[in-house]
Length: 337
Image (tube, rainbow, N blue to C red; front, side):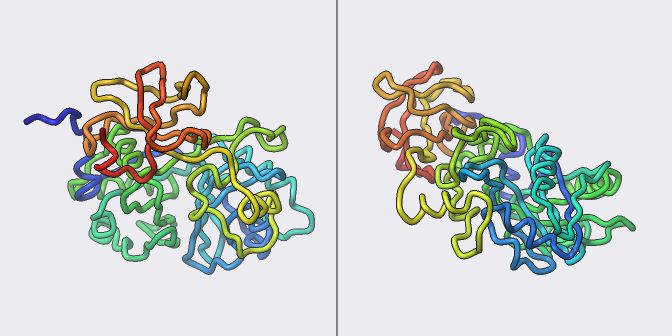
C-alpha cells in the first residue's frame, strides 16, 4: 500500500545514512583573554568553563529574562565562535559591544564565511572518509582544523534530530569540502526533509517556533522565556554565576512556572497547514503554529507550537487550515488518532 505522505528528497538519507544540509547562519568571532568570562555574563549557558575543543548551546537573554537569540558556541583555544540564526549577527554583536567596559575582548563578524552541515547517523564516518576529522566531534564539541591550507571549524550540533556535524570557514574551503563529500555520494537534503526530521523529533527552532518581539535594547515585555521553548535542559545552566536576565530565569525555575509550553500538533491526513496560523481552543486563541511538515513517520502533517498551558494534551484545536490535536513531545506512534 502506498504511503499517505510521500518521502521528501533526502529524508531516508537523514534517517538512515547522511546527507548535506545547507542552513544559512551568522557567525561571530571573539578573541582576547577575557572572551569566555565576558560572554558568559550575557548568556544562559556556561561558557566560562569551556576548554579548547569544547562547545555548548544557550540563549542570549534580555534584562527581563526573555530569549533574545539562541546560539551555539565553540572554544578553540585561540578564539570563541558564536553561531546565530541568519541575520542576527550584527544585532547581537552590537548587543555585546554595549557591555564591553574594561574587558579584553574583540568581537568581529568574519567576511566571506560559509557553513555546511553533514547530517545523519553516518555523518561522522563520512567526515573521516572525506577530511579525516569527523572523529573530533561529540555533542556540541569540535575544534579548528586545517583543510587544504585553510582553517575550518568543525562542531557537532543537536538541532536537527539526527547526528549533525557543522563545517564552517572561508567560502572556498567549505565549497571544496562540499565537493569532496558529494564525490563520496552524499546528496543535499531538501528543506522539506530537514523540517520533517526535526519536527518529528520535537525540536523547536529559533525564529520558527520562538523569537523575540523586539530587537536588542527594545521593549521585551513579550517574547519567550527559556522555560517556554522546550529547550531549558539543553540551553540553561543553573549552576553558573550571574548573567543578564539570570534573576528572572532562576526565579521562574525555582519558584514558579510559565504560562506557555511547547507541544506537538497532529493534523488530519491530507490537510495543508502553514506556519503562523492561529490555533484556538473553544474560540480562544492559545497559540500560533510554528514549523509544519508532512511527516513520513506519522503519515500526516505535524507541527510544533508554543501554546498556553490551559490547552492540555489531547485537546482539539482549530486553525485556518483545519483541526489538529495537541500532543506531548516527543511525538509517539501512539499519539496518532
